Amino acid sequence: MRLSQAFQPTLKEVPAEAQIASHRLMLRAGLVRQTSSGIYTWLPAGLRVLRNIATIVRQEQDRIGGQEILMPTVQSADLWRRSGRYDAYGPEMLRLEDRHGREMLYGPTNEEMVTDLFGSTVKSYRELPKMLYHIQWKFRDEVRPRFGVMRGREFYMKDGYSFDLSYEDAVSSYYRIMLSYLKIFRRLGVQAVPMAADTGPIGGELSHEFLVLAPTGESEVFYDAGWDEIDWDSIGLDPQKEEDLQKLREIVKTTYSATDEKHDLSAWEAVPEDRRRGGRGIEVGHIFYFGTKYTESMGVEVSGADGAPLHPHMGSYGIGVSRLVGAIIEASHDEAGIIWPEEVAPYRAVLLNLRPGDELCDQLCESIYSRDPEGLLYDDRSDRAGVKFNDADLMGHPWQIIVGPRGAKAGMVELKHRASGERSELPLDEALAKLGLG
Ligand code: 5CA
Image (tube, rainbow, N blue to C red; front, top):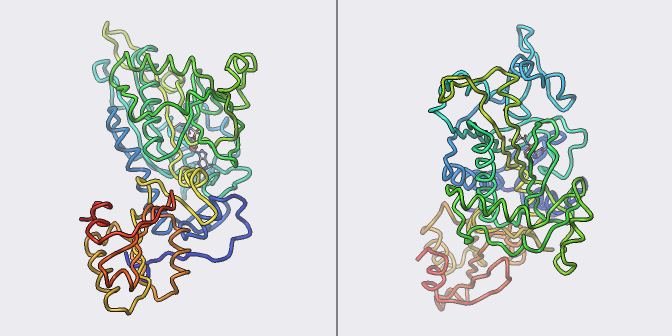
């Protein structure tokens, strides 16, 4: 994309309403615009990040047997009356009425809808287990929407739902998802620690939140340094192997972690002092095992192996996809702007033409840009070099390819790695090879 043509309205001034870094940076870098309290339009660069996150989530869910569906945002109140949650949910639910006077709502989550779908489709134990998920907009009329997309009213969530025949199978599904989540967050370039949690309006008896450490997080967190030492990508645990899920359960049991709500002082004191870590955290995911809560209340059963009907055991598993955009920035930025992890960045590299109009600079830039016009952002604007450097740092693409008249003459470009700040002057071929554009 040529920046001269891009719809990416960067702002020089820090917007007054933005209290935390990620909110400020998202507005300044032109990722989102607020349309009303807690509701945002996603601009092209922001949408690219949102999609990149969703793609990683999708790949990892599919890898463990998840099947993607897409349920609607608008639901009927009757569905929620069947589970008893229509009245219980309270003022966070946006209630609507259609032209026939039928009560509807904008879905804050989808347990009822997916349970009904499952119940009307699956009849026999032979068809279990099943894991369905979708990535869809949700609405919760939060009392205090704040921090930009972090606590919005309309937000994008991956919600997944598992159906198993027994408690044991359902708990395996739960830990399979937990392992998948740990891999997802690792791929997204953030460190997220699972912490035992309350189940709130979703219900159930087993629940963990995943928290990304950041000083502006809404919860206080306490955890054993062990969580920082595990690389979930290379740990070699296979979510499809029961014995590996057991190993994960052992890690969870023996490596302390808790938010302030669940903090256990005596367990904390058993953690050696030099291994105690604390701070604040942003909840980017939340998983629940709630057994037969919905299958019983909504009258969903399948025939068991012995012919007797049984209520499948369920769990539900959320990831805050839009919140993650903010959380990743909270965890990865500096004074100058955003530092995108490679896999989520809107563009892998930005190409800076320091002297548009100079024949050599233009030629060199065009030849680089033509190798990957989809994956490169080409700053071909006629602005001063300083403006381009500042915008490049603000937008935070992992690499900057800098082309100036002196280098262009010698067939050299400068590469800047945004995260480390390292700069190197390289022959064009070498620079391209390093970025996989050779
Ligand atoms: N049905 C369950 C699991 S699918 C559920 O709704 N869980 S939840 O309430 O914990 O939400 C899942 C995730 O959505 C949270 O971990 C959080 O990352 C994100 N989320 C929740 N509320 C908001 C909000 N107001 N703005 C942005 N993200 C949110």
